[in-house]
Image 1 (cartoon, helix red, strand yellow):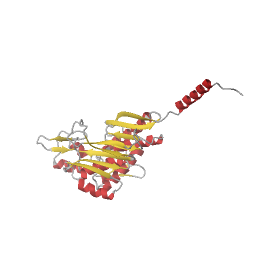
Image 2 (spheres, helix red, strand yellow):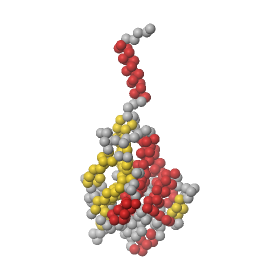
Image 3 (cartoon, helix red, strand yellow):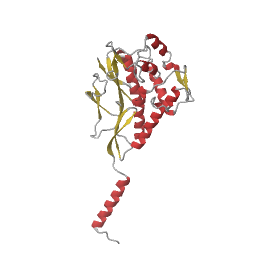
Image 4 (spheres, helix red, strand yellow):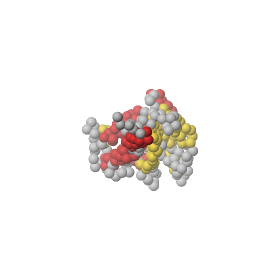
Amino acid sequence: MKKWHLPFLLLLIAGTYFAYLQKHPAARYIQEEQRIFGTIMHITYKAPSSLKEEYTEVLKSVDTSLSMFNPQSTVSRINRNETDTADVMMREVLQMALAVSEATDGAFDVTVAPLVNAWGFGFKSDVLPDSAHVDSLLTLVGYRNISLTQDGLIEKRHEGIVLDFSAIAKGYGVDKVAECLREHGVTDYLIEIGGEVACHGENPKGKKWRIGINAADDDPTSTNTEIAHVVEITDEALATSGNYRNFYITPEGKRIMHTIDPKTGYPVQHSVLSATVYAPTCAMADAFATSFMVMGKEKADSLLKEHPELKAEFILE
């Protein structure tokens, strides 16, 4: 029988264990960030190694489908009437968007872009619209003016209708990154893109994830980092929409908010400065947060009673 000397045996065991660790590294919390959708994505997740390459490909796919600022994206080509075929991601997002439109009686509407642009947001306009201009643009706005066929074709009632998924695309991007992480066995993560958040499992301290909600102070330069309060959540998504950052003052001293009511064609005028929505998915939270900014608190409270899967917090003027 062969005898093993103890030092040699220890070296053999250590070498075998080291080789195992190289093939099966222990999971650790990884923090990464990158620019996407015109903002910054922050992500923290527990994994043996970085998955940045994998989730970046997912984000590129979302951009290729839904970005109005990508001239070759599916939505840009549909808006130019070069195609009427929606890709898989657009079909999924459009179905969600139309469902939220129905639930909110049109407060959420992916066809509102012509009005947003006319009021000086999105693609800038130097001249504010008069009532005649608003009325003319309203003929191009309305979620019932578009439909998705079973074959994945976008049908528009008017050629001039423009689709804009900016009020749901960031949330959807967060959801797709979360889906990518889960496919690679990650169960502890927090993903944030431009204030839209999804999280699952535990933070590095073994507790729920802590998320700060910004104070709704006038901040057109987006430099104010004051936190109104901190929430602790897990297995949930949240999104915040507010008028305290994206606004301007006319020479007459009138404040023009970026939230446009798709029904009236005019910027909203009510006491809600921001709405934070908690939902099962970030796309849903994103869309309903925008909807509540249009609806105002009273109508939003009524809708929340009908949708127990949603929760919301409002900061009032």
